[in-house]
Amino acid sequence: MNLAKYIMKSCVVPEMEADNKADALKELINLLFEKKKMQSPGLALDQILAREVTESTGIGKGIAVPHARVTGMKALACAVGRVPKGLDFRAVDRQPVKIIFLICYPPSEQTTYLNFVATIAKLLSDPKDLAEIMKAETADDILDILETASERFGEASERKLRKLKADPAIEQVPDGHAEIILLARLQLCEEMLANARSGKKQIRDRIENIRELVAPRILRHYDRLNKARSPALVSVEGDTCQGCFMKLPSQFVQKVRLDPEHMHTCTNCSRYIYVV
Image 1 (cartoon, rainbow, N blue to C red):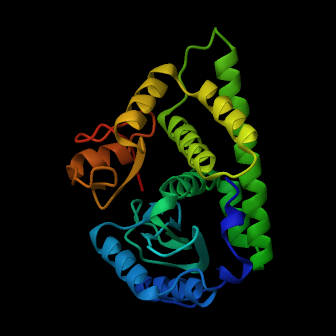
Image 2: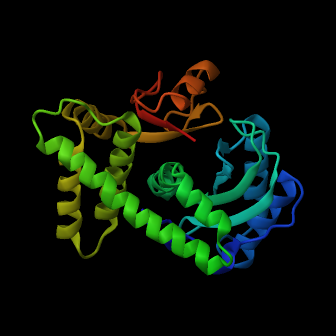
């Protein structure tokens, strides 16, 4: 996913002056509102602040991904704020947060949101990309880095997975995080196909290409879920599965978060889950 596609240059703040988490979140939410990405900032801000009280969205390495599902929005939008001095977000690694990706999205774009967050987490796990973003001088520079890194990551991940698929001597299955990304891409393309008025053949071809990369066992369960209780892949927010809306044991959610090598399913509805 090209992250820059969902971020307006005017929604990037290279040098935030906020000295606490709440003020930083308010500034970014108001920025999306001013740029007419949402009808009202109040409900989105309430949702984001409530989530931060329950569980920090600081995912480590100086990155935070606060988010809200906002009825009435037309498409996912993200505001980016850089805080060189760092903010206390009570992040999972207890380190100050220096770059914030505040994401708001409509209920119809759950899969787009999953792709977006997964791309951020994987892309910025590379210290070089993160360092480049922190050194960038302008909003244009930050967006250029995100776009270039997104394209490179997408191409590299597909090459790697195709190599694993093509070589029968390699029995290693791609890690759970890679499979989650593939399922998120697959689900996104299926949503696009359902709403497309043109270009359906290209989308179908893309779907088939992705399906070839997913492990058969995982794909079978994905297809069964889609027939019985679509969507097959959902996020877990505040320990609550966004498929069945049942609260999961906190210890289980923490285990899922710390174990990217394996796929996990909701203990209630059996959907594939991704913890953000």
